[in-house]
Length: 477
Image (cartoon, rainbow, N blue to C red; front, side, top):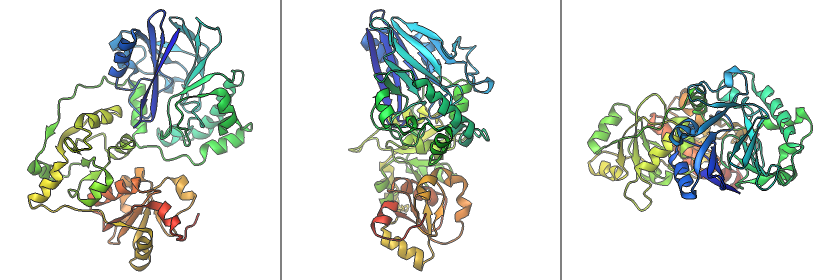
């Protein structure tokens, strides 16, 4: 008998799997993230032992837990040997890993796995066909990683746009088209267990269903309906969002050898005076409160990255990996999330330079101490249009390039949020800035970054381009 347990990290939109042979008590974990305790605890709860650990590819969006989990569980580590010398695991020999190539099979108790090389998203990518040999000799499922998603396929542009391998995206898109041919002889009933869900930056239109079947994907997934290679290449490359800036660092870390997750001592808790000294020194302080609370009142020079489902995406894009930083976190309020949750989320993407924190009560204490707080003025679409017309305000659009191409405010300046820290000089001057995205979430982060960097008067079009369009104001493509 086979047992399957899916783990899902909502902030990473990432899925990993424990697959066990209940008759033998052996289990494998596929694509584990850095929070390895969850897999060890689940295996113990199910009465099985993790005997194997593997992953579909070298991940770019989180620090892999494969090496650490294999060591902790004393399990066999299996890694791809495909992709050529530049995309092989540098630590494989030191970790005693078994290297897998296309067609290789291995058993975990009565459950058989067959590796299929499916390049395109990455050169070394593997898909695993899963067969419960105690019941049948044909596969029942495929662990597809970042090859095939519900409603989409893995994006082939990341090596060029995130890892800066120039000129690679066209070839990767063509490789992905041919990889999809691997699915043709497989049956409709084959279950699809993908590596990501809706919200992941590893695709552009992922569905929210946790899994699918190959038959359903053949009926509904755009990528499986296209028979022309040139048409596929064009469609898979167009409209891809900007990759988070931290993807290049993750790819390098996971290829060269992800470190074990450090046992972190609790960071120092700062009072008002110490926080003031930190800010005076120019050190980054991240306020994790909701955007509305930050807009109402915040400590000057702090940056707002709300702790929500997009927290890790924007922390990875905007927080430097090379310097310490501080946090403002809600430890005691009615919506308290706690320091440990924030530290865990940051650790998942390798951001572990947290030097200290303050409770959100520090914002009130800051004002009570006689120090000034700031707010982020919010404007509606009509007021934004008036300011642009009468006061020559800069309208800053921080959406993706695909969103911009679909329609934008006439005369607006376009800088995707992930690129804003390195393109601030384009906004020099004393003109007011009205920042917007599609619905308001990204513009709130951008407004906080602009204010923290000392930009001219900043206003947030909180309803975003949706509100602009709803108000009947002009737009252009």
